[in-house]
Length: 202
Image (cartoon, rainbow, N blue to C red):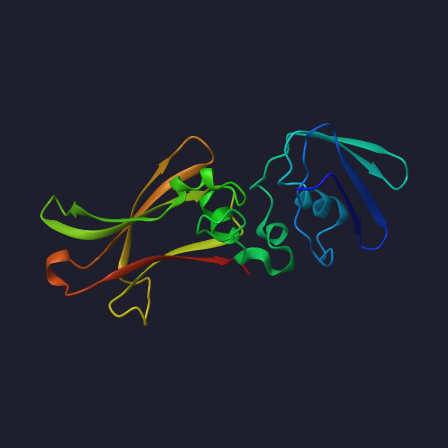
């Protein structure tokens, strides 16, 4: 955290920021705008600032920002400037792409525990069959990513053909809890692995 910060977008728009009182500023450096637009770049840089502070643009215009927080409604193309989709800014074990897909905050580890994938078992087919299940939280606004449940018997070859959708339960906060299950009865398998695969939509 520093006392002041300065950034120039696309070599033409500059923004200088100074802290007010004890308010600190924080940002993540990047080398270029990456085509997202000056406004999008500016907001992306300030996602992790807290409190109130003043931005003084090169033209003399003063801009006030108050209590900014990460906004998951921005597409992953803005989250992923400079190939940062694999960054784990808060050290919670979830990369930025996963935080975006699951609806947690990349920069606040305290907002991430509910986004951990849960593996268990459940009874299906009228309670006569036990199957491996995988449950995760999905960000309803993250329509720029693809979330796929996959299964493997050897951790080398993965496919989505051996899993079946079970349910989606709205959480009332812009996310839903989604469950998939293995199609193979638990008693009939020697070993089985399940995972969630998250990719950026082309």
